[in-house]
Length: 252
Ligand code: NAD
Image (cartoon, rainbow, N blue to C red; front, side, top):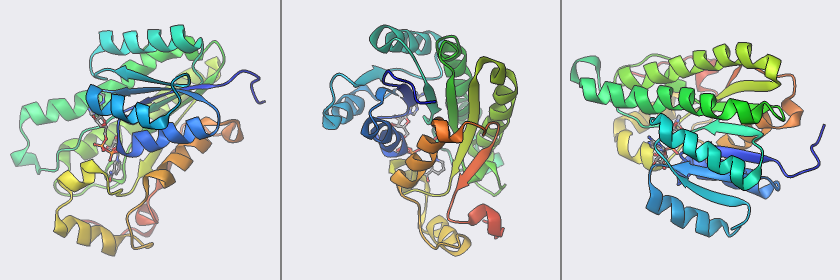
């Protein structure tokens, strides 16, 4: 059933890339959005470009720090009074093999990509439970398939897919659905940093649609899973990957 009052989403990692596209998708449909990011300067510029000072609020925050996450959710409650959707999109990527990944790199990837969504869910669920709602965790095809170079990143995303199922089981009774979207490669700042020419060629060969995805294509899937049209879907991971996972050609 459509709620009468404007709905509210909290999107992490929303200063740029896929997260900003997700925030804009909600804004386009009349939602209010809390855009959360650790990069306060880029976040402030991005929120200004949205041009909706009432419905789009910047929330500078590190998702791996519980006190900051709790403060961000408190700001959403004060500002908008409700929370219908939480999108855990903030992430960091380290593309290195096992023997070259430092303990610090491992810990940072797990802290942002896995502990972050755990903390945001803990902070947001009491407010979300007042109306019911949906959580979407952004995982990756790197969490569906193993490959070299992704020991920390792939493991963090596979664990996040399982956290999605755990939360779906636990939060259904509160009227909260929990799903994941696993993007294939999207040419964001993150991809520009970690996708070498060799990785780009591998993806091109392994993806039946023969191209990278667009930020907006990921955002559309997230928006669907957060809305009432997905009312009977919970505990699932939807790969938005040009057919990569279905066809099964491996990456080196
Ligand atoms: P991006 O690097 O362009 O954006 C990530 C955003 O997260 C940045 O704005 C960054 O400042 C923010 N962030 C990082 N650490 C944070 C923290 N501790 N607290 C709050 N914010 C933090 O990356 P993107 O490509 O837009 O990726 C978005 C999500 O999609 C990530 O979870 C990523 O793992 C996932 N993903 C990306 C791709 C791809 O090819 N781009 C593929 C699969 C999955």
